[in-house]
Length: 427
Image (cartoon, rainbow, N blue to C red):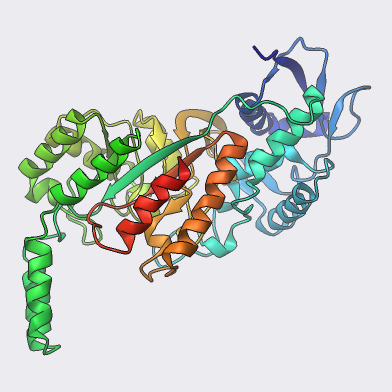
């Protein structure tokens, strides 16, 4: 059994206002490695100027210049924060230990830079191009935690508390081959009248109404998971009428209940896929969750926001206050990697309340629609697999969880070929 190295966190007097954020980062370090913050420890990790003699000293570079405090919590100074995070990333990549590792961990996990975002994309999301990211080969929070563990333990390769695993998730954006029952017919009329392609109309109706969904893809995904001794996690929408969502909880409650019953009977997991706009609307979020539980009879504890809707100021609090256990929303479809700078499971943080939450989060590293299909990118199967294998190697290195998103409704090549090969390679 590995001995735990105790240490005391010391903070320069002019920086004690940031104690909640620094202790949050310290808790992540303790969760990753065999070290533990204790008030009576003789070994000291010091943040800021004038460290005690013999302390492991941490320069304060991100705080206080990168953030400010008020009654609404902690906020970023965007311009300063971007520069400071970029400088820290260079130090991590260079293998130096002269950077602000604790604050870097906090900023990456809490997504501080996403609060009060100046620009958003067409879905109202924090823009990928504005993020201070580590690459999938160097998640910054994990690298910073390892560097701190090296300092505290004196071990050049400290043992991780966490172990590599693969998590398979499936967002159910459509229960059948359409959002609403008459959609395929309207599309078919358009094919005939506007586009003069009657053959396309026949194909469209056939693929939507006679696709065998949802059983075809749900059964396929469960079987593939079982062949690899893995569990599939299916995230369903609740009752909603918004055009960006699918109303199957309203229009197909019987079918929805039969599908979720089958999933549970096979030992897989049913979760929640809150609709568009719920990331900042607690009342609607809860109405949809309660409605889904009423239809399915399942007590829901995990899931992912639809369209990856996420507001760093509000969304974690909504999930936490609703008693949820795990949120896998964090990810960028343009990027295979770790939006929160870690491949590990971690506690969420409330930027408004300035405290760690019961809710845990995981970055979704691999997203089917971000790799292929043309919406964001259209990689070849070989290129997509190579990119995903790099993310898997990072998870193995740090003892992380490789979260994969593969939507239901996709049973055709090349997506199925990609997914089957991916499961073979990341085991």
